[in-house]
Image 1 (tube, one colour):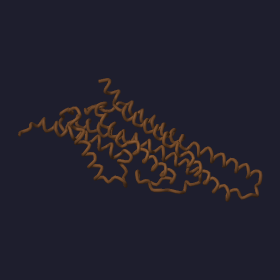
Image 2 (spheres, one colour):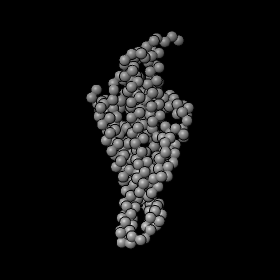
Image 3 (cartoon, one colour):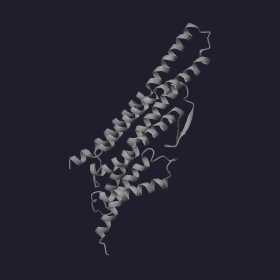
Image 4 (cartoon, rainbow, N blue to C red):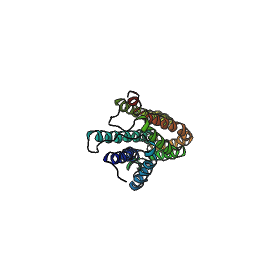
Length: 263
């Protein structure tokens, strides 16, 4: 069987372009892109398997010369969209790290650092604890399957073509960064307020009785109160983090929708 050059180009493009977008998402998204949890070979194999399943279901991409300007624009489109979707979900998990950092600094555990296997950096131990719990919540809610579904639906919202992303998508990502800090504040707020009130009480005691060694009593009291408040408020982590994840998935689904509507 003989194939023309256009047929070969179309056949290669129908698998290469989806592979690029899926691979960019897998390299950046949490859980999938964890450096010490998911080896690179496994990520590449998973990307290839998803591409082989998804590519036949997608509309035929435009047949372009691989060395043309249109091919370069398509490559940039796929990489940007995959990275933005993965980074959006990464910001949702970063809210847990920020919340844990605030709680650790308030409790006096800011010096306790732990290696984050997802990002390969040192983070406060409370941030790592919340990240582990958030990962378990993410997997229990089938978040990994939702990520794959949203990624497949993105080919309908923004088909493969020599069109760059809408500037409004970058603006939504910036606003979503502010939502990350709001979510972190809501998660850490109970422990932060309680420990702050305890510190204010110790400050009043220090002014009333300067001879008392409040530091020797205040540090273990603050730390114990912090752990107690975390145990009490830990059930609230599920609805808080679920709301953050749902907002992240909504942002991921909105990428490219405005651009396609204007076509």
